[in-house]
Structure formats: structure tokens, C-alpha cells
Amino acid sequence: MNTDASSVEISGQLNSEERRIITAAVLEAEQKPKVILEVGTWLGGGSTLHLLRALEQNGVGHLWGIEADRSIYDEMLKNIRTAAPEALHRFTPLFGFSQRIIPQWLAKQGPQFKIDFAFLDGGNNPSEQILEFGLIDPRLPVGGILMAHDAKLRKGKWLVPYLSRLDNWESQLHDVSAEGLFSAKKIAPHPSASSFRSARLHLLRMRFQPAEVAAALLPAKVCKFVLGLMPEKLRRHVGEGR
Image (cartoon, rainbow, N blue to C red):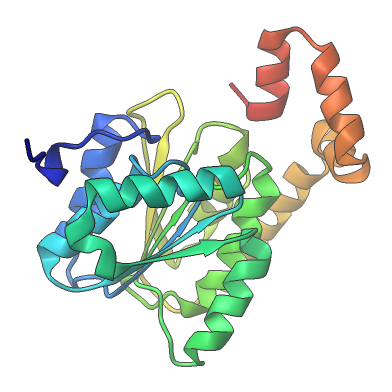
């Protein structure tokens, strides 16, 4: 018996309301996104699948999805082929860490290449989202959309307040889950000097919090060992911000 691909359920992050919000952001955009960048596909059933289906419904656009875990990446590809075969022509998977992949990818596209929509959902280290934003901000035009998951957790503890202080972005925290979904729209090419200074000072204070200094200075194996000694509740609070 044939199975309708649209009814196939595959594992993925985001709850139903978060999936609805990101889908609506693509479908209801003033200009239909032609380029979407996603960092952190996981198994594909969350943002990846819903972004792809939205692009296919729009009839225009392409999604580039970055995943750094090889086993997860391979499984994601199988899942997307099963769940969204009609939209595969709109998807290019990229394997590796975002800080390496994004510059390489942008260099191949050329200096005039723009990113209409970005979804950031990579690792738990808050510095990752800040770095990713710095890499793609020059390629996000006025009207461009940036969304990020885990906005209320450690992952988003730098990006959310940083972007919220920049007056060339309109931002909103969707409090629809324990993790939180952040969205922002670029409304001017550059921030004012005062808002940029405020954002940078706040980011500097966040970077010098004791736990973040320790995480930056200590080897990853040491951090993992120390976290392993903690009770699970404390470990999740320190490592993930839960």
C-alpha cells in the first residue's frame, strides 16, 4: 500500500506551535524567501521538513541545511527522502561545523549572494549562535528573517539579548515552549552607534560570567568530566540552561 509522504512522521525538534510559526514565517513573508539557511537539522522532522514543505508550497526557494553529527546527518537524509521526496530539489545538505561551513558556502555563492531567511539551532554553546549571526548578518538584506530555537536556554542566552538591543532589528520571543522560539526581522542595513555599543557591552558582560569563562578556557574533556559529576538536574541547568 502506498503511503502519502505528507503524512509520514519523522523525528524532529520543535513542538506543533513552533512548527506552525516557522512555516507561517516562510509562507507569509512579504517577499517569498529564495534562500534559507538552517544550522542544526537534527533528524529532519522539525524545522528542516517544515521549511522544505513551505518552500515547495511557495513554489520558489532553496534550503541549505547544516548538520555536524555524521550519524544524525545520514539519518536525516534518509528521513527527508522518505517524508518530502517532492521537495528534494529544494534541499542541499551540508555536513560539518557551522563556523567552517558557512564561510566556505558563502565564498562559493559569490559576493552578491543574499540569505533571505536563517534558522539557527545548532550546539548548546551560546557563542555558536553569536558567531553564526556575525557570519551571516552582512548577507541578510533589509526584510530578512532570522529565527533561533532554544532561545530561553543556554544556547540563546547571548544572541537573544544581543539582537534585541540592535535597533535595526525587530525581534520577538515566542514563549510557546520550555525552549522558546526567537524571531527577528531586519529593518535597516546597520544599527545606530548607541544601540551597537549597548549590545556589545551586554555581550561582553555575558561572556565574562564565571561559568562561560570556565567553559571557554577548560578543555572540552574536562568540562564534560565536571558535568558528569553533577546531579542530572544541575548538569542540565549548567550545560543547557534548563
